[in-house]
Image 1: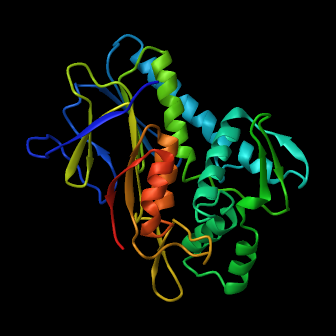
Image 2: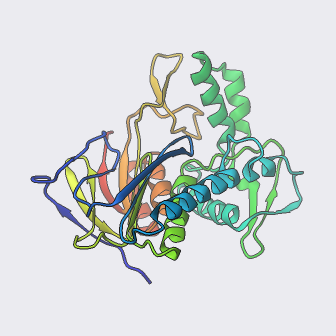
Image 3: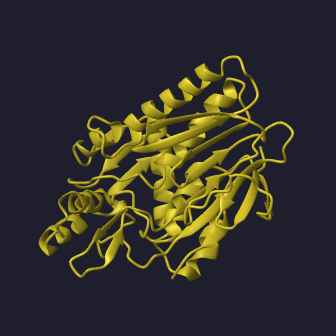
Length: 315
């Protein structure tokens, strides 16, 4: 089994150090890798490749194409995605799903169980309500929020992991895998690049970074988290919390895109977390989960999912 290796180093002397609130960011002095940037997953995806020079462009293209294909499996907002099609299935019947969707749903449900539903992959009705509020600039009325809340509930999903099939237990279920799918997709892109002979890679999208082997002649990939620089090998870093994605609620509070499954509103307490894990899927999910549960629950979740809490924000 590949082991994750990391250490903290001081920021003095680190070139091109970037800071973006609690977002982890790759910093300079990475062994002169080739850099590629494209828009996928609704954001810019950044890829750094070192090692082979021949075939680098082709390898990057294959990685980005894989990201596109997996987005059409896991996206809750792209019409025709496998996830959207699953929502349309008749409740009470088993539906075969692809391995990628089955794996992501399995981990999402594990996190839902561990957080007693604070992290809920069926929060889609509230996500879509939040997006409509952001689009129109108008707060939803309480009746619409109650209707959306009534459709949320991870216990309404039954997953047969061995056969990779799903049964919806009630109509009207809508998914949102945004807090886990991005990290999982970056993991798979890194796997693809490794199979092509590019083991020393870094992938970054939003608050998620996945790295594999270190660039030649270095101790690892340098990733800044606030005023700390982590040197990483075969690891993932994810941050969740306040971002530029806000709406103003009817009471005047700023509500983030991280939605509370009990109130049905975006979190407004400013909670934020950055975690270090062995893979992007787990670090992505747990970074978000930590912002949804009481601080006293953080150590238990960190141990249960094998992550290290690198930084925590208010409250």
